[in-house]
Amino acid sequence: KWGYGEEDGPSAWHKSYPIAQGARQSPINIVPEEAVYDSRLPAISLSYDNCTSLTISNNGHSVVVEFEDMDDRSVIQGGPLEDAYRLKQFHFHWGGKNCDGSEHTVRGKTYVSELHLVHWNAVRYRTFGEAAAAPDGLAVLSIFLEKGDEHADLHTITDALYMVKFKGSIANFKGFNPKCLLPPSLRFWTYPGSLTTPPLYESVIWIVLAEPIRVSDKQMGKFRMLLFNAEEEEQTKRMENNFRPPQPLKGRTVRASFK
Ligand SMILES: Cc1cc(C(C)C)[n+](CCc2cnc[nH]2)c(C(C)C)c1
Ligand SMILES: [Zn+2]
Image 1 (cartoon, protein in one colour):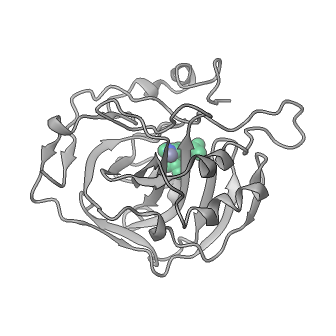
Image 2 (cartoon, rainbow, N blue to C red; image 1 turned 90 degrees about the horizontal axis):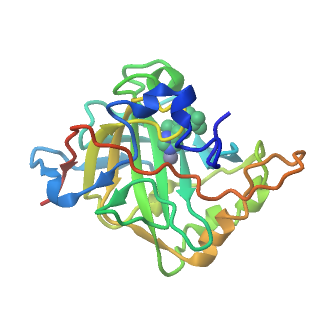
């Protein structure tokens, strides 16, 4: 199977997943000066007030918070999106003790971590799986985490990580609303891309917020206590550096919602 190590990491994925060298792969390096300001782009609208978080889990690649997505109780719309997309889950990518782990970069700058809020087009597709394989199936809202003071609301997540230390662990995680993780500004860049892990489906409309949120080193240290391995496996592998590096733009246009 695939991972983030020397043998099974991003540079090897193309062997089992040739789309890794496709025309709309993610992440990318965003160059603001080359982004096209589009004044017709509506603002992003997030309706998370009735969202229902269910669980927090360790899938062996990241820590994931899943939501109830049987109706349109929590959706993202506007921006580049034709339809409303349903919130399905969010997860993070991060680095190691002294190195950054964001997936997208801005003028080559990396951030400590990157939060992905994953939504799917339930207007056009019946299931998440079907949407995840369709060109306009998913919309991922990406938020950069920058090193700074403690983030007051991130504690709710970091305090729960001990419950999902091992791959395959899952715990109740009700009542969490991710709107507390948004930065003050919803100014964004948007471009057509892909999942950043195998199967690397080219099914994601990316919406990357320009303004990061700030988190402390101590809070990030708690993410690095998670493990890639299951409890019964003998080798203990710390969960860190679970990010894919930027991929070729291949002629795509990045649009900006701001000048
Ligand atoms: C069908 C599928 C969908 C996703 C994400 C977009 C939730 N993911 C995560 C891929 C991803 C993570 N960040 C961006 N893409 C996978 C991985 C767990 C195998 C499978
Ligand atoms: Zn992700």
